[in-house]
Image 1 (cartoon, rainbow over the protein chains, first blue to last red):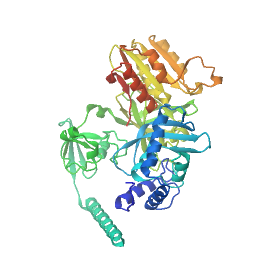
Image 2: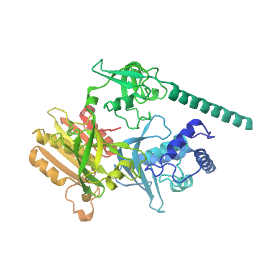
Image 3: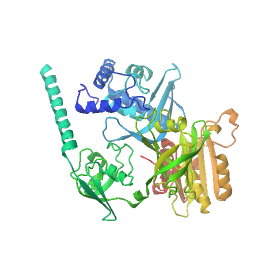
Length: 156
Length: 367
């Protein structure tokens, strides 16, 4: 799970099938990305390592910001003098598409850098997908997090 | 290195082939015939065709066991006690079961296959859960991102529920969902009108259900719901009542107020309704109406970021800033909290610090 190297397996095939069966779905994890899931995972792993990072480090940073932003109870707050963040939460929880135990809050974190104008959005599930599976979602997916963007915007 | 990779690929391929063979064998050669499901020591008994999972078999008999993951084994909600006939515990179940649950034969009903006669225990409240068809009687905007949906029940034409409970609303296939899904919504109407159900739905960005409700659902549409569910209801006691809500979390609070008004419950009650700006408040007229019907009711609105145009003279700040002004140590208070999950958690912790016992703080977790 998110460890190097990423290995093709029947389970990963099932996960990919699960992810691909949702075209145009509200939670379309793969977007327009036609690459195999293993390619997506391997490419992103390579990018993250080339930047001197790990999936855990990226997830940790997102989680710390999320926890701090939650204190706004739905209102935007300014973190570290430059991250205007807001957490919108809906009731209920989402399972992970990898199919293992665990449910994740239906949260949407929006971060806006007041100095550069750049923004990011992620969910609690996004953080888990990065930490546990090295999955930043497919290109074209509404919640794709480009590792390079994360490094630059979050100053990783 | 190449040999290692080839070895791993061969092993993976072989494992996949074996799994496929097992699935085919199970599908074509396993014929379990008719199986009896005995419930609560013979209180009810059903004969079903074996081979499917217990969750689905019970659903076919009109018994709805809560599930948030559509039977995929990833929510852990569909637990039932299976006293006989379930076979060994599966690896897919073990992460969800405590040692005590395992000792008590609790299983995930979505993972238990009906292969022989079963003896199970079902909590009595699950029998009250039914599936209903309903017609959308009215849709109205409460704010720019919250709609009220009023349903009139068709078949069955009444629902018995406790004020504060919720239902599961079926979203059919549409552009945003390639298969029907269910989502939970609290009832805003009171049990005194069992033929109608009122829901309050916030549009959630990319939300499967809320997008459908806000963009596709029309008055006159026929819909399916099941319920009622939940442990969020008014307890019988003499203590003062504190109700805290933000956004669509006001829905079950309205249901509790309907009950208080209909049953002339005289307990002192305070509603704290928080929003960002005046345009985010709703049900103002209805809450005024409740104040007339419930003399002991006080309603406090608080805005966290009122605009200048709001010309707001009321309380300012989040609900967690208002609560300490109302609840004092040693108050005999019972709290009902609903809304933004982070608000619910913060309010609960605050109330505990103010001396309200945790067991007197109620909120709906849904999942």
